[in-house]
Length: 406
Image 1 (cartoon, rainbow, N blue to C red):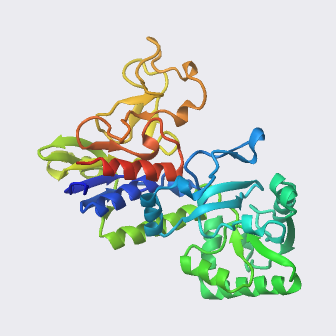
Image 2: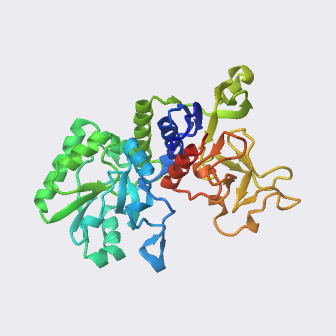
Image 3: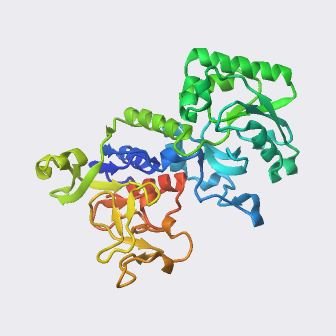
């Protein structure tokens, strides 16, 4: 049965949850307005994407817990979204982190080198004299991994002369990667890689740091110019992977015709016909009522959780809740299905009364579809309580919530 058409949807948040909500609402024929502020959790990601949080676990070897077992973990709609976004490659892979851990993932930045089909080969590791990089140490750590030992894969460090100026040792990895979007620097990189390959014909692949450009065309040219796979390890938080996601987001929103507003929302309030928003710039004028935008048939909150600043936590509150959303909107907070109000009559919420990583479980109370209370208000991604704090789980919750509108 065809879902009923929805009219005008406001999405607050520009991470993967917000983009997935905008894409899904557009697919249902809605007019979509997306508001976003500073970089959130998605732009701090490493380039690997999972449905469940991944962590090494001795009982599971280097596969850890939360790893992807097969492509069936993603639904057809979720795969369609990944293809539309044009950033993460879907399908299980095995990648190298920047600290030398070999781990599985369900989707990945296309720049990340997939190690699985390279099992048993010799992989060259680029040694570049940057302050944040030690290719020789990375090669040793990767070769000592359980996966490398099990498969007989070797990692061999080799100098790569791609620095031209002394300051390039110290600039952020994202700025260093951007240098190779220029044709002159890209040609230097390719010449060095070809020379390396000719000196070491036994190499099955080349592993670099997160430097293979910010533009998709740069990566395609580099990967297409050599007879062996070339790729990266994961990037640091706030690095190359986040900028590539932001570029993919901009392309998708423009293609869909989404009204994208790089401005934060101060308040969400009920209005005739649905909801209206007051942006930060409008609130600062003191005439918020006149400057409110809307009405919207529904609002999707995708503002991120405690880690990315979407939820503020102020311990030892004497009155009220210790939790506050970065947007003024009537919602309830919960953890493990229980409301988060005052636990101690003296100090309010006491995290010592909870077990485990409560910071990753607390959030806006939602039902299974992501409804956050009043009709037409949804919370998705990391802001919602009880959801895995991962890229693909955030996208899944947004797509599911939009499917429940109507």
